[in-house]
Amino acid sequence: MDASCPERGILEHVTSRWGVLVLIELHGGRTRRFSELRRSIGIVTEKMLTQTLRTLERDGFVLRRALPVIPPHVTYSLTPLGEEAASRVRSLSEWTATHAQEVLAARESYDASASGAA
Image 1 (cartoon, rainbow, N blue to C red):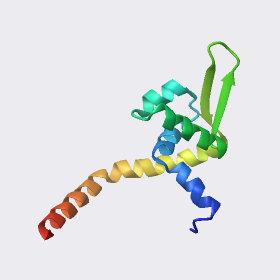
Image 2 (cartoon, rainbow, N blue to C red):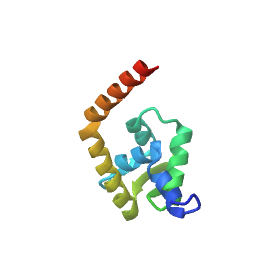
Image 3 (cartoon, rainbow, N blue to C red):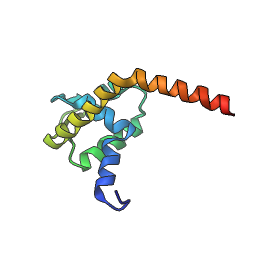
Image 4 (cartoon, one colour):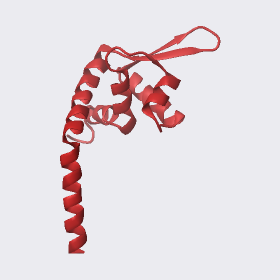
């Protein structure tokens, strides 16, 4: 995958630290306000969540709806393209959960042998 390929940039957006969590949180037709997303994701800063949402919106994965009321009411949901991407990211997330103990055991084994070699 050449650095100039558009696929690479798209993959980076979808698999970014916060992009993955936004896609998973909005998956399944969920609509969330900014504050709801931020609470459910956890430690993400307002700035990072805003940047992530804008990037995913620009790429066609997230739909931002601003209602003309006071105070402003903005919601986020996934587009059909976003739902498809989220479904695939969700599969990877489920695989990770299934194999987490194996990965942790491999880390322990590696760390033990690496510290013994030093």
